[in-house]
Image 1 (cartoon, rainbow, N blue to C red):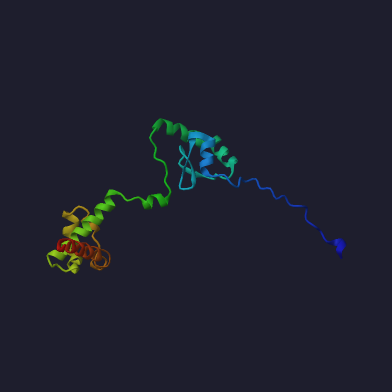
Image 2: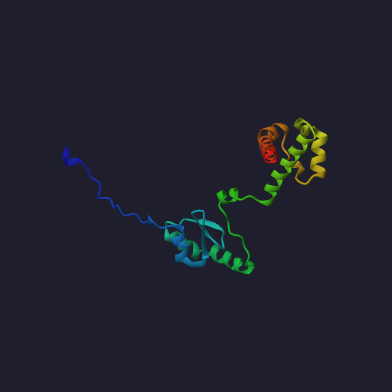
Length: 167
């Protein structure tokens, strides 16, 4: 039985992938045509993600017709935004987001000081007025979310104000 056992040829343990190459290493190797952001390698002119592990994939992309065409367009425009990863975009707080939070907090504070129940914010006439006449007024959430998310903040701020005035 042992005579009929077929053994596989010895396998090569070498892989054709570079194990310890980072996207930043490829950026320094290929110059200004590539950039790294969030651990990913991007082609600056094409705005696509490239595999940084295989050097051949990068060189094939740089030799492709689409890359040369987009590179020519990129040099004509000379102002093209770099693609950012989703995590970087989500971490960024824009002025509109901070302004929205400020409007909501001011609305809750106004309702508390005037003894207006937060349920009144759900009335269609109030909603129409806010969206029509208040900048970012349409972004004010319903009363249940106002109570859960923004009322505790207002309560803490008022407590801190009162405690600072007592001293």
